[in-house]
Image (cartoon, rainbow, N blue to C red; front, side, top):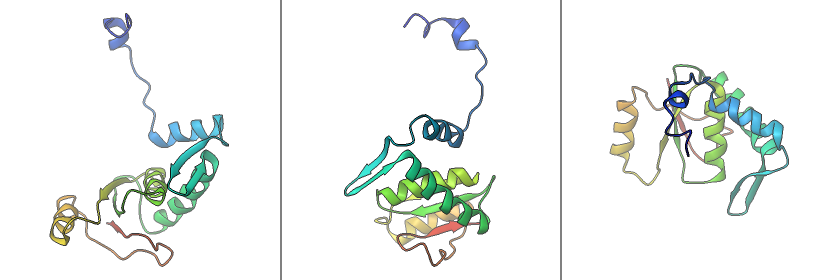
Length: 132
């Protein structure tokens, strides 16, 4: 507690680290630990990493990368977590969109983010992505 109020600690330079780097470090530390549990789905850090890597490569093939946004239309699910990690691994940012929202609201969110909706790849059965 004392360090939290210490100005020296507060002004110490922070080494920038990305979410994918933090995730990779956790995978390396405990690959067999449970990373995700949602309903009947349970994934270890290694399994989540492998699934996210596969999807990240697909997203990069569709143009995702630094400076890009990928809209993800998912209910809260294990697949949504895999997709979020994959987008971050691609270098892009994601815009999580609740499919329960009215179409007009979804269209507004995509337009406001400066992105247009595009069709998902055929191997993307549970949601769609929007990317530009």
